[in-house]
Amino acid sequence: MAEPLLALEGVTAGHGEAVVLHDISLTVAPGEAVALLGRNGTGKTTLITTVMGAGPRLRAGSLRFAGRDIARLPSERRAALGLGWVPQERNIFRSLTVEENLTAVARPGPWTLKRVMGLFPRLEERRRNLGSALSGGEQQMLAMGRALMLNPRLVLLDEPLEGLAPVIVQGLLAAIRSMVREEGLAAVIVEQHARLVLPITDRAVILERGRIIHAGGSEALLAAPEVAERHLGLSHS
Ligand SMILES: Nc1ncnc2c1ncn2[C@@H]1O[C@H](COP(=O)(O)OP(=O)(O)OP(=O)(O)O)[C@@H](O)[C@H]1O
Image (cartoon, rainbow, N blue to C red):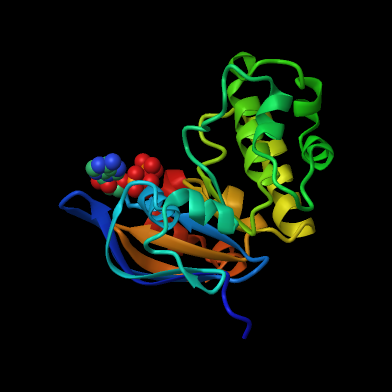
């Protein structure tokens, strides 16, 4: 088997003295899309920020990306190696235009301004608008567009659909599907609503109280709603 792009082995991490993640082992292969599921507060964001080196303290275990030990690298070095991250708070530059937001971070690679605008036609329409003038859904598109302009090898999306109107959710899902399915970009997608992301991912991992309690194919999980129900709760499945 080809070497995984991202590999976590026995990762235990937390905030200050509080341990949030326990003994997490997880791999993501090149081009693979993984859904990271779980109820509120189970450690999904902590897992993403541990991978990015953006806050949590790694207490044990190893963290490798593209064949390198990244555990001690600052987050900007991890980004430079090809780890893209769209945090929950969608950190865009509010005082720059849409186009400036995108070009400010661009790095050479297959994702260009034209292709990002092609993926998100709404951003093309809003090209000259300031970040602060965008709706929540447009900000999410811009945050994803910015991550793509960095031409990552793997992108970590933290609840990209949260708090958005259903019509926007459908548009974003289509863009994510095209990113991972047609463009073959590896991704880890954190989501509360399993049914939305299972159809567009290869594998699913469910966290409960900081531990992996289920890992398997997304299709198999879709076909076994009782598993999702048991671990994620009816309203979240
Ligand atoms: N910066 C922090 N300092 C201290 N504790 C934190 C911090 N961030 C998160 N926690 C705690 O870590 C635990 C896991 O939180 P985390 O945000 O990783 O969960 P989550 O699964 O992403 O939840 P949500 O879906 O609500 O974002 C929670 O108990 C939370 O209170």
